[in-house]
Image (cartoon, rainbow, N blue to C red; front, side, top):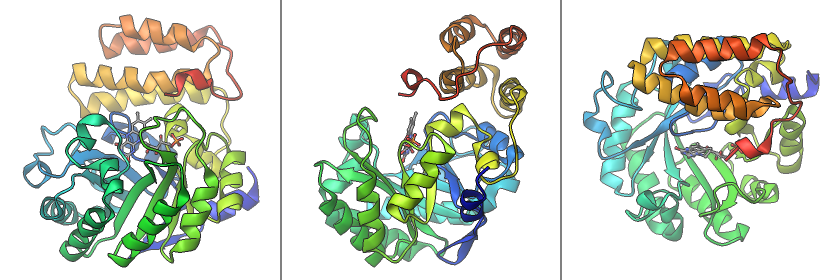
Length: 340
Ligand SMILES: Cc1cc2nc3c(=O)[nH]c(=O)nc-3n(C[C@H](O)[C@H](O)[C@H](O)COP(=O)(O)O)c2cc1C
């Protein structure tokens, strides 16, 4: 691995009163960034911070981790786990942030980027980007409620123009945010058009707090290009982290992957899913992972088809074993058709 890149990624990053050990981080992904997947990432190492799946702020204060879908974690990941909440009511968001602080996570992240209709209809997620004052009020209320780092993840906004995003960055910093993750896509674009990295540079220049760049980083070369092109303080990786969970270890110079790693990672995730989830949910989550993982394989569709027919995780493990016993052709670059 390029020493220049790994040296940068291994440099600790100060966020609020805490320090992230590395600058390559896992972006938040609903249904994908769950406790089992994060355990797999942690076993490979190299990931400075991991974002949780997003949780509804209204429900969080009373959420029970032993039955919750997304409010689950392992005690030894709390120091690098950023918990993401979604909502638009400052008081509700503040109460949820307090719960997050009580549980001892690294910090709380406010989702101002989700453009799913059900979320935006309530005025939350990316809808807040249309109402900068309300977005600012949410950040300020959360800031007042907690001492732990407060982070904001957001996107360009509703028009293809960097200026509102720059204005929002200044507002968030002014309201007390400790770091930003910026995904330069317009809402409601669900990753069909390329992100505009130049907007990340504009956001970075506008504020003094750390900015994580995000969007279409699929290789170490992309990662270096984003850092060079934007001056961002760190890089948040989403879909590629699911496809190749070892990239954090690889790009930070801890691991030199061999072809066996594909089989090993998939089978290990199955074992870990078994530890954390009831069988039916574990199977759904593995299939969801497999859609991204299959992008590495020339005949990835056939793996997904076989997994769709597997009745349980044991059968899914047999499918994976059988598939890799045939020495499948690996793609050097993941097939973008798998990446929604
Ligand atoms: C399946 C899926 C679920 C996502 N869920 C969330 C989420 O809950 N919160 C959030 O802020 N972003 C979410 N995102 C967006 C990612 O964090 C990230 O911004 C986006 O995928 C672009 O980064 P990438 O090109 O590295 O994947 C999701 C993305 C995907 C593909």
